[in-house]
Image (cartoon, rainbow, N blue to C red; front, side):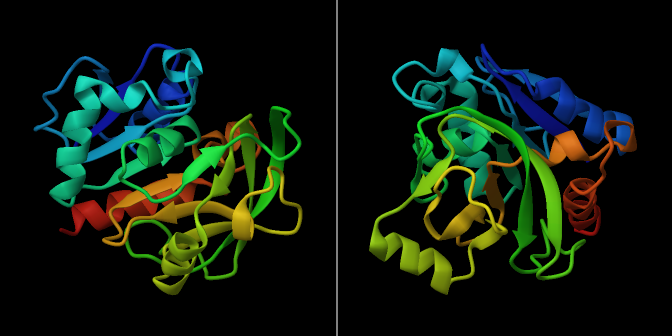
Length: 223
């Protein structure tokens, strides 16, 4: 299998993602410039964190219209796994691949910290490597990470079990229902604000995020 990491002007977690997939898991990984629309050789796509297009207008608003994202939307509709972390999560909501929106943190400050994140349920493609209710310690770094959705949408994603990660205890940004990460109804698109790639290598002091990437890889290999 081959993984693609989308690179926008302003991306700053793209190499972190490349290291996890290529360096730690030994998977062929292609860095995809935002103007490249040919993603046909990829089995899974990752949209990393950063400040795409300088976060002008609002986070992810410009990135949503890039040629690469048009192809990401097509890949998601085909059922290919798509992972968006931090700015990637923001882009996925702007592109309509995930419901809701990420808005300014409740305290209006940029937050860079480590937080406790609870795994809500075991989902084959993303969280099967964790136990339901397991609490992870993951880094966050965002100014617009507060998950928001209208009441009807919020009820729908809760009823359908689309919330895969929730902040445990302290809510660092005021996200509704403590939401830290959600998937689409089909289950192949995941967006999350915490950074699992920054907690995947023991050299960084934690491997709490590694199982997410291992589960994703195992699910694809078994197809």
